[in-house]
Image (cartoon, rainbow, N blue to C red):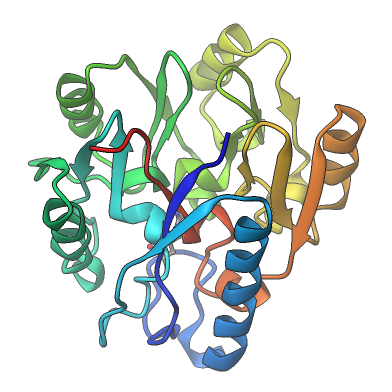
Length: 265
Ligand code: ARG
């Protein structure tokens, strides 16, 4: 089944501030390389038959390339993002406007949430992270608006500040995750829901290997996540490694650059 993704070209990408432990503004970053790496990711999606739509990047919003944070779209309904840090706040309305202009039903969130950074939709349930960015109250707000059960999970390691840095859906029913990113109670919930999950090592997690995108048969994943790639191949997935080292300097990987549009309006 082809997917529909929204992406944002990193024309204004830079590491100008530090709002997560990956970001070191003093170390600099290479925008041209970021654009080339991002083009590579987009080309991979297109080669797999997925549709990619684009939102115009806005000058002064260096993190706007991380489209996953812009919203959560389920069944053609768009739950808008409301960013935790002032540097990214203007991205929320920009993404919401993109959807509103195309006739989607949208909701401007009243609670802080960073879209698919902290919400990951499976067939029957939406997994939602909290602890660093998204307010737990947003989990309930999303549930009531989207009409899907939302399961709250607590993130405890600041390196894995968004749920999508610690877990990704393999398909509608199973996930891969790094247990060390979650509280003891949330680890128990994940074991209960996903007894057959792929468990990633600390090394895989430290190269943002969990920030991957699976369409159920292909997994687009950071090239450095070696053990995780082997395990995914062993489970029958076709693994497509991508090089996004420049975007990782802002704390992002393939999934961060990708907002899934589920269920057209
Ligand atoms: N610099 C961005 C931030 O800290 C990175 C966002 C990564 N996005 C994601 N979906 N994890 O907000």
